[in-house]
Every structure is written in C-alpha cells, then in structure tokens.
Image 1 (cartoon, rainbow, N blue to C red):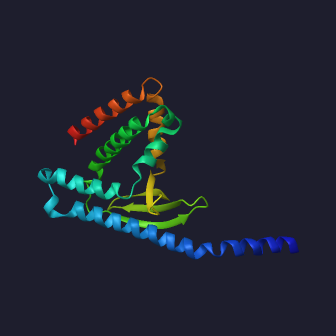
Image 2: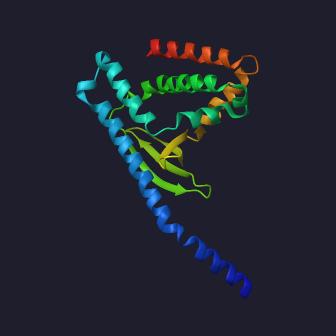
Length: 206
C-alpha cells in the first residue's frame, strides 16, 4: 500500500511541472486556430473580394493563410506512408506542391459557400508524444458537424496542422488508401502527373 501511494506521489510530482507548460501550449494552439479561422472568414466575407472577378485574389489569400498553419511536407510524408521510400527528394517536393494544390482546389469551393457559419473550438488536448488534438464544431443554420485537427510543433517551435478529421474521416487516411492503390500500377512520376491532371480538372470545374 505504501509503495503504491509512493508511486502515485512520484507520478504527481513528475506531472505537476508539465501542467503549466501544457496550459500555455493549449492557449497558443487555441489562439493560432482562432486567428486562422477569423482571418479566413474575414477574407470570405470581404465585399471587395466577392464574385468570380476576384476569385484568384480571394483564393490566393485563403491559400496563403491556410498553408501558413500547415506543414505540407509532413502531410505528404504521412499520406505516402511506406511508399515515400520510392520517391526521390525531387519527386517528393513535386508531389508535396502538387498534392497541396489538389487539396486546396478540391475543398475551396466548399469554403466559398460560407454564409455566416460559426466555428466553435470545443477543446485542445495535449498528447504524451508532444502532439496536440483540437476538436471543433462547424455550426450553420440547419446543421452542425465536427472537424478535428491534429497538430505538432515543428523545428522552429511553431504549431502546425498535419491532419483534419471531418465527421470522423481522416484526410491523411483517406488519401493514403487512394495513393497506395494508385501506386500499385503507377510510378511516382505517373502519380504526380495524374494529380496534376486532377488539379486542372478541379480548377476548370470550379
């Protein structure tokens, strides 16, 4: 019994210094997300950026805002998984750039439908491996759905997003399964060419 209580006390002493640090990190992440959400909504609601004439300028500003809080290379590495070993450094860079374009043009149309939706940050949880998980909820007049973000601290000490789950579906897992299947019959260069074609198709459609 005494040994058990001693272990509990030791664990508490070890954990205690982490609590203020984690609280600071949670606050930093919450502030990062709030700032990004507010900036994106500001761009979408700006009357000077409305309409097709301003589409490129509007999308360029949104893209810059979102890429600023995302580690595109880490996302690409996770999406490729073990297949990453089949890519040269040049191919990986080209894949990263092309994949970032594909994700953006795929989802930008949904963002541009913004009509006073609200994004509520429900919680920010620190994880034992130094990463963090932020749970949010998107609210509109007729529905709501969860959108949860996974973050890590990069080599510059900045928090970056590397995955998002919308209604429980992970972007990383979704694309990884697609690319694993495509790479059964395609080389890295062929996959990159395929993604570039998809980018063009989506740009023309939107």
